[in-house]
Image (cartoon, rainbow over all chains, first blue to last red):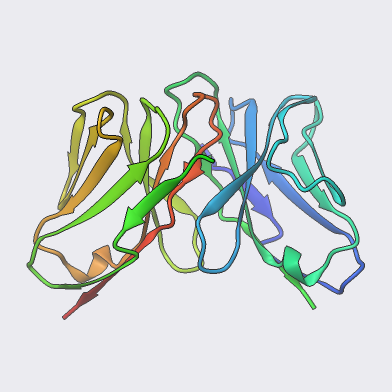
Length: 114
Length: 111
């Protein structure tokens, strides 16, 4: 059973470009979470999605950031007009749902904005 | 604001000695998680503590939870080099998978 798959592993963008980060959850998992880790810090929750629905986006910056989890295909975290402060590791996690289900994390996408 | 604090932030350990990491949190939570992260890698789930008084052990690591004190400890017995990593605790107050992570504790085992 493949784990949570994220791609790309590393992404370099110039300021003002768009970044698209992809996440395929574990098989059978319908809950997806995105977290961001700034250098030397812990992970911060960004958004929680189920298929075709955003459940909680309280951790998402109000502008430039969006997320989706379509009926078919991976979840996408999209950052428009990237700035240097967006440089971070972005982790996706999935779970089958339920209060006792631990999250399974992907290997992350390391975004560098030059 | 919900806070999860770990201490120490950095721990230089000698092999074969015992150490403890503390995780304090500021809100009610019946779920506490411990994760390990190696440099440049993802998070590996170590323990899920589901109730007050829960204690779990795996190898040289043992985690416990006191929900009344809002405190969890991760105890390391006879440290070895392959335990060098950053350890995070996290709580999930609303049981939705919206984890609030601690600041992390960087462990370095010295030979």
